[in-house]
Image (cartoon, rainbow, N blue to C red):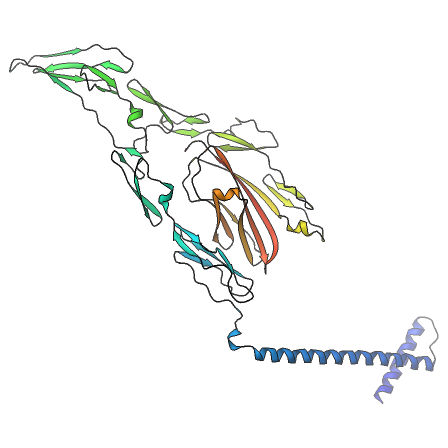
Length: 447
């Protein structure tokens, strides 16, 4: 009865459609054929739906039996927890496969072992458990002038040789000059006194001024002179530059000391001005004072004692193009959908220029690279190029920041180049690469 009612309603609906299209209502036979076709279509759909339900039920049963057979200890599906090294720390708490943990050492210690370990599908960790080893600051021989170095935690101490003092034995022990006195026999109780100069001519000598008091001859010299060790009638110039030739404690001049008769004067190298105290040197900023010959296409980089002209050019990589978005940054243009080479090229390349003095103490953090926003679950930092590893290393300061570390002092003048790569990943799939090119100009001077 119900099916017949649906058939009548369907017939009325079909007839109305034909009427709206200005066509005659189909015959009873045509309507019955249309209804039979619709019924067959619905029956086929119902059969397909039932078959899909049976297949899904079968898969669920198989999955249920598979889970039931798993051992009880496999509930977590995580790698075992890792401890932070002594005198260090661990970054990262997720222990699922594909995730990473990172290790850092405290100041004064260096990491030996794997900086990054990844949880593998076998629920074991890649790499080896790292340890933090005390850095031997004495390896760089910081104690000067024959001093003996003793390594300490995050530092060192020096035992200086005879004649030297200071934290690194850099200062000579001061030498004192004493005025000599000459005596001659006179009558006892004589009270007569006299004063007279003794003549002597030389650029670095003067005649002493002597006086007799109760038979004793006292000789004095002008400031900057002292009684000669061989003749108390002669005053010889004190060479202040030689007397205080080394060490911050008694150093007269920051750069060059020139001895003069009765005194001294300090000089500075080209690219520096003398400060008001007459002893120190201040770098001239040739870039801000326009004392340079850099073109409009170049950047003027002030250095200690000079300047450098740098031209920033975007990289040329096959199947990838770049546009300069700022004077020191190039960004990759959108890649074609089917260009794998383009997607593997760096997303951006940044340029940074630094100026440092010669023999800068090390280890020292020179530059930091950080991600403002993270899209993926992992950041990796790496130092590109083999030559840079001679002077640099890369370490983490936190989960989103990498540091370029100067590992040893560098004697100038020279130029150092380093490239730091920051890679962003999501479940071990590369999302983007970001390159920072750092150029360091090392001065020939230590100031």
